[in-house]
Image (cartoon, rainbow, N blue to C red):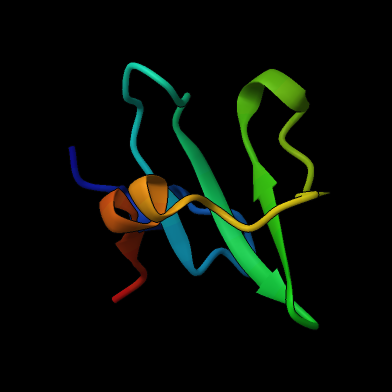
Length: 64
């Protein structure tokens, strides 16, 4: 499924679609730290403890 970039939050650079292991969410990298935003956590940016996995990153869509 392709991302609707018109609905992307400010600063989003990547979109990760829903899969068996992941829920759909937006991503951005700030000062070397990846952040994610999704509806289940209030649509606010949250820093990730670890960067996206190779599996996840390989399925992410980069903002055009």
